[in-house]
Image (cartoon, rainbow, N blue to C red; front, side, top):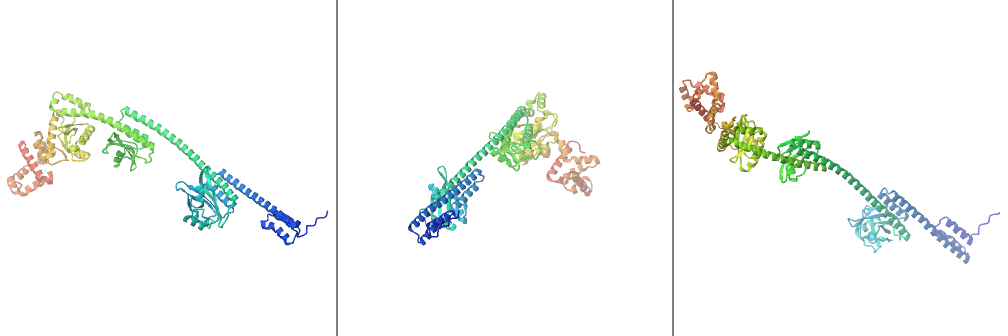
Length: 636
């Protein structure tokens, strides 16, 4: 069958054929109108032109419908992609950037951006931008009601402007207009992001030329804004769920930790309480605490004197321990944990733990609990010690009182043995004196010292008195004076009697110590310690006559021994020297020797007694000793 010839040019059929071909090729509106224009130019009939015009109008409608369908397909594809992003929801910023980018592409805009509300500041800020070239615009903040975006956020309604700079519907501000001008924007559209009834932000699209945004553009932007709102709300809920889970895990961990701490605290409490009930001492408590904390423990009194120490490692009493007393809690001072040992408002001392600085809250509370048990134990020991001190004080008073001792020597010795005191050993009576303000502290220190040294302590006539085992009373008194002066932070004078072994001599020893103390205070020797022997001839005047031989021995004994050993008469030379008033010429005449001989003998005396033998005070003692030696009948 032969092919049909195409319709002749300039006819309605040819115009319709061209129109359908252009429609199939997705030609523009102007191109679709071209066949009708060509038919008119060919002077076609009115009926043909009308038919082609009608066909052109239908073709334009078909073209518009196809374009709308294609756009709807693109919108649906974008929404499906956005839904997929939301399903993954790995990163909110990524989802928001994808939404803003799709908005820019779908609306064929030069720039798109999204702002979110800042409840704390009461405005909105730029969260995501796509296509922006201005740093100022990207940092822009919009107050509620300011500009197009502020109005959208305030009213929860979409707004569009074909040329924002010239649009008087919006409240223009300097920062917003300057940022918009720097970005070069004219046409702008913005739609709200909502969660429920609340506006949380605004989604924008904009062109750098004037543009009237169609209702379809606004509707598409609203759909994307709804997806962005879902993304933000989903992330918020996810974050809340994660935070709730994290808090639940923390609560569970805290509960487990507290349970462990409670079990440990209960076990420690049982151990420490059992120690106290068994009659344990401070040393036992320190050892138990050292095991409990795995480090060295030191327990100290209020003056920093060590009461007990246990565990391996260095521990000492820090100067900052006073801060622990003020806070009554565990405090860290130079790498050591310090806690005050308190009984009500009274400080009994401190407990110190070393070895580690990372002490947790549970361990700190346990450390403070140990300090409470320490206070309990110290109070118990103090109660026992107070009762024992009263017994010791009563025994001392009986020993130093002659009327109480008559017929009771055996009973007193038995009472002393029960307290661990052996009166068969040499003992000295010491009397102490200090300023009235320091007397309570001095009594406490003296009592503690006496207890530690197996002695007795008490008070007589307002003065602390000690009975201590010693065969060197002068040296003991000197040591005690220094020790107690440091303890009370003031001068303490200590006077000791000669050492005695007989109970019958203790009252006399007490009187001797009293006379010695009075003499030392009279002579201005406050803060010193000594005995009658240390006072020289004053001791002879105030002491017992039986001590004359001791005084002679201390003053000139080495010279007497030298004469006895070598058959010399240095003693006679000294007598002559003093009788001559220290004049060598008169002395040599009395001795019937050469003056050089006298000088040589005196040099020998100086070698024996020391170079200070001829000083006024020493010379007086030597002269008195020489006279007492002559009066004793032994003139050798």
